[in-house]
Image 1 (cartoon, rainbow, N blue to C red):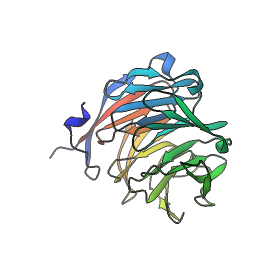
Image 2: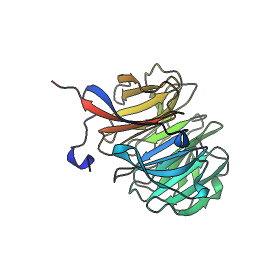
Image 3: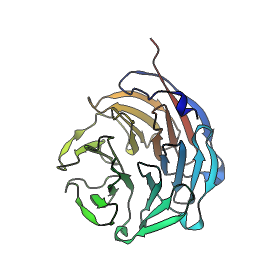
Image 4: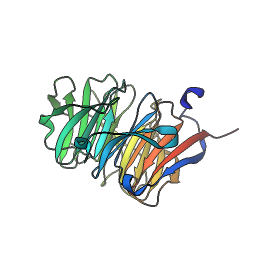
Length: 271
């Protein structure tokens, strides 16, 4: 694959061009609100009016549409080994899917309040969820039991992700900047200094150095986690960025809006 030809990107260096390599805007697949990229380069998508689908990342070419029960998810996350997908929605339980064949494996009934975002811990043992009307919650993946809220102040998050070392939880919301929390204590460590019109989606680079976020104005922002300062901002879409994902090697970003998906190449600044 293309990914195997490149070393892992270093997100600590300045970036030059963000090149849009592919754009997908077929009407039947519009409305993507969840993205995840597997270690094999498979891209997974979901949306409130869409079925769960698997794509070939480097061409944005659809490979498989999951069954009828996969329709209506708001967000998704992929297990670290790329074997299991979790999907969530505002008013339904979290569902577990076999990422390879699309089979529905299980439903976690304790998640009936719904979620706006979810993520696996790097060791695959814990799932974190967020929602507009609840705190961030931690769940034991093997049992489906809630381990407790992360923090009583972690209310109203719209998206969530974890650093690769599992030490930090990052959240976004419409009302505030991206905030980051200590995983073990739940302590709020601080906000990132992003001047944004409502952060709607976020992920983190594979090396843990940069936060990649999208906002209501269609701006894609790369921010240093160490300094909290923006590294790069580009106008990625005319509409709200509804989801963002980065490839495991760090060289590619996928963004989604209500009307389209885009694949970006992230090339280091020369010289």
